[in-house]
Image 1 (cartoon, one colour):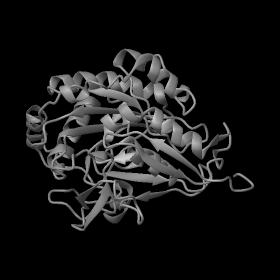
Image 2 (image 1 turned 180 degrees about the vertical axis):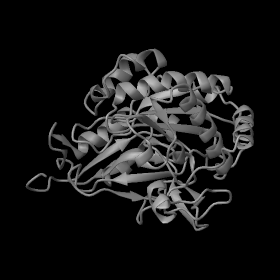
Image 3 (image 1 turned 45 degrees about the horizontal axis):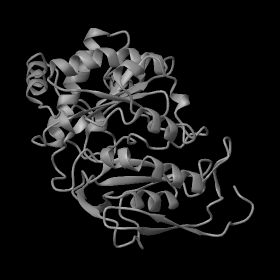
Length: 344
């Protein structure tokens, strides 16, 4: 960290309702020691990618992942609008699985991104809904998470199969790096289905992928059953579960970014090449690979037919995260090895 505090600066940030003044405190504070990236550089990064980032998270209730002491400090998720937020920071009301409501920030202009970055926000975690209807997702998300013994290349290989399955379901997938070893694939959907239905559709899609490449992909919730395969994390589709947005800075030593890509780029990239220092120039040169995503909303009719077929074959719901209330139709939330010991 910087040995002394540097004087605050005020940035003039243009927006749809005129200029905003955003105060950046201690701008020379080092957030990423390895590449020597400061708080001000993170703020300026977010202003440089504001247009595509707002396309990705604008009008969405958004959780902030804050690293107030930089990447080497403890992070926490800010799920409610912080006290003292400027009156131009919009909010949206969401409901947690417990039934408790909360007001989250709802980014609407570049100044909100700069203000959040000044609070130590690295990752923006938007809900897959819009502010007008926070109970019906308009974005389906699949998180391909490489397990020990696998890596980014393995995740990329599975995304090829996932793309085929999404197309069979009538959905258009849009890939991005997670900012680490994984891949996220997004698909716009019409906001007609509940979180439960969207999650079940993701499970059916994941099962279809795993059947085609069983040695490479799995939807097993319990780690002891995953093996050296890529886990399709269906629970990221559950209410109040989010993934870092496109263009988000990840809390990793090298300041990597969750970079949106075209399908033909996915097999030729190294996720480490996309950082706070490199992405603005790439955006200026190549534009936003996901710029047309909103023009391709799909439906879940086919995927929900797959859910019914799976149920007819004895394949029902899968376990929810451990902090979730018990859900209707959910199987026992018990680790398989423990369940086996209990019956012997």
